[in-house]
Length: 303
Image (cartoon, rainbow, N blue to C red):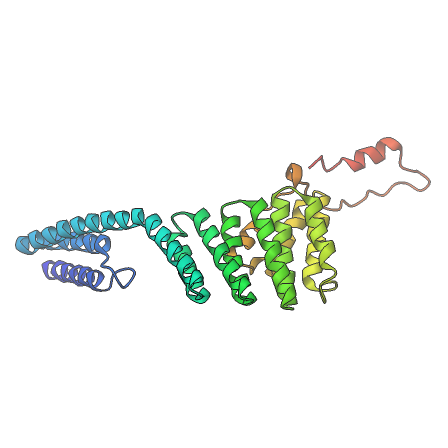
């Protein structure tokens, strides 16, 4: 029994050392997980009455916890410095532009956006849009639209739907200009979902109607799905809306748009499709009365 506990303790020590070497991100030690393993090792050694090894494991656990706190505070301090770093990068990018090196300016702005994205998404949107403008001025439309896409997704994530609708429209215009029509179809789906989350059915319908001018859209599966979606939304048929939004066409979009589809609720909570009731046979020559018809109409209840 003691030997088994000693082996168990040694296994936990080995795991702890591994966490300290590789870390959860492979570039910083995972002190939290290491501390947990040292604690398990200490318990195993104590149960085996190996008190010196138990004491050593406890000491290592304490050191790991202390290092974890130090790492946390260092990371927090670095996060606080981010806005200042982003501001400096913006200034540097302006200098690159003035000196005729827009590529370097764009790369600097994009890097700043990535740095600040999880801390200040609003600032990241601004930086991605600035980067897109630089690329667009250089007529590098593919790079521009990629950055606009990042901005659009962040706006959707932040539920800033009015701005998101405008951003996606700009993406769509560029994709149309470079004749990437299939992506235009996907952007139309994204637009419609955003407009419906804005409770603007008219704008959503207009998006689809205007997209008929895009080559190949009319008759595509994207078009058919959107027509079904709008019909269900207009008829307050939650089942139909949910069926469309859970189809592969919608589920495999960018995650932010897929979530919009899955969370879409029709106005007023919607209605559910009623199961067709088997009509009761009536004697020959007997017609349904108005009261019978009314009873049949509401036999399933209002929901």
